[in-house]
Image 1: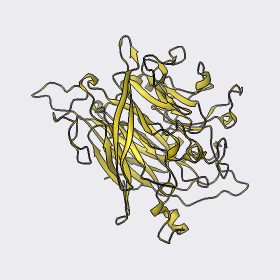
Image 2: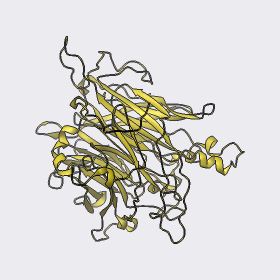
Image 3: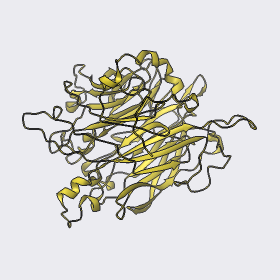
Image 4: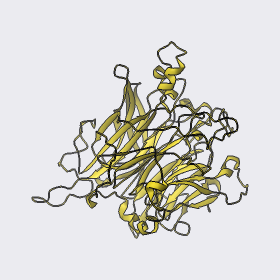
Length: 515
């Protein structure tokens, strides 16, 4: 069960090392201790501890956006407003990773990726009862309740409105995985006219990708993650590669109304510890809301990054918003590479150590501004690029810690009702607001107001800035995401850290810090 922390965390053995931790220990002395007492400087709304090391944290849109039976309530087609309010919970998934210490009394030390029980991980259905490998993992699903709406008065700004308490509560479902979970992503695209269950893809230390659908039981009124499909195990030439990151093509060609029939199909790009990047086609086999099945077919894989003649860990990858044939990858070789997936013998663009002082760890495309994307690095900077003039960043911001995850504000995903419109119906789109998980530096919120009015060849002053920070984590903050309930409700933020196994929920608009 999930327990609230009531005392200091206990020391975590180094055997539970995250694949990236050996790369960023050098930044510990630079970042830790620079922000005073975390408890007093960073008030939080709720705090929990996870049984395994928390590695990723991902949220989605409120339930009522895509699940019609619940959204409409029990009062007919129009539904009851109170019922709709009750069921506007936000799904949140924490992905966990832990390296188990095997007994070496009768055998040699296990190699990376080898199964602890000696089983062949390629066979069998990987459902909730799958056996553990040498790297244990689990998905912990929380349904975050909708806070009481607090509408600001006409004279009160959104940021100054009181933030209603948010809590994790007990997990709705805990799903044991066949291996440690290193990354996860919700499929953000859905058709509001034909809602289907959301899909969540996990990148695992076994090298495999697993997809689960969000399901609801009308009898128990509980939500769960149901296994929908898995990729095959890597072939022998793939070795013991860990799947480090993945991304859907859900922002690569989003157009009016965000509908399913306006793009070429679901794809996933994934990156690996052996220097490769791979593409996968995701085909729907069964589309029932509570019994959804998909097939995952790897269509292409190529050697993308090397360092000193050896494969380099590819920490991050993404499709480019605005061109479905372009993907990007970032690796420990201090380079960002742009690829045309039709010709992958060499990248179309490469930015190396002339710009990046350390490995490239995070890529996040803007949800509705074509060609705009953010890049994070171990060098503690977030850079904003335009793919059309990629030689140098538009903005560069120091965040006080190695960057591991970058999340654009969720309101950006709603700007699809009118092509080219820069605001939702309430004018609350935060085009330039970015949440950053900055490892030893904790979490930061950046604001780049000029992005709301950005056009190619327009020059703006260097107005990108850090507007808020959260430093209560006592270990590396690897996961963070927004809790967004709609344009009339104040945001919250959730974040998690690895060695201390903590997850926090906190207010991004603290008193006296206007964002």
